[in-house]
Amino acid sequence: INSPSATDNLSTMTFAILGRTALIATRRRATVATAQQAKRRMGSAAAAPEWTGIDKVVRGYFPQDDQLAAAILGGYFGLFVLYKIKSAISGTPEPVEEAAPVVAAVAAPSSTGAIPDVDSEEFGAFLDSEENVAKLMESFEK
Image 1: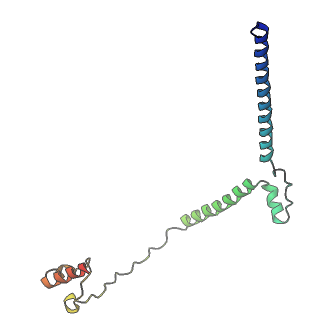
Image 2: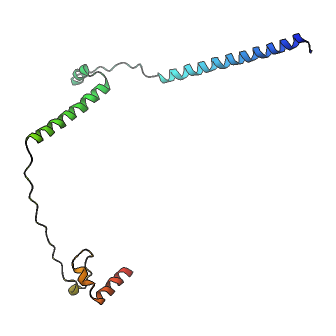
Image 3: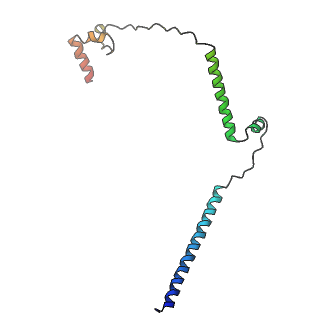
């Protein structure tokens, strides 16, 4: 069994089995790759739609969807630019007169006993009295 010819046969046989295994694996990968490519292409060979009316005229100039979308966006941009040019030529609009600020009538805090708003002018006068400071502290505790 340890003769040189038996060892050569064994190594030749091992390499033949490895070669066959590699060949089968390569064929299997090629089959899987072909099947995946076929899945990606499904549905891409649909017939072109038959356009009628205004669509037929527009599609005569812009046959692809992306061309039509670019044409629509270009049309809106053109209208926007024309509007801006027209408003720049027509001049500046007349200034709008601002309404006089309305001063709200505020009741004196001492007569009603209410605490004035912190931002109002009466708040400083309100804090001058110890009673009012006590009212303010009581309102914070509630």
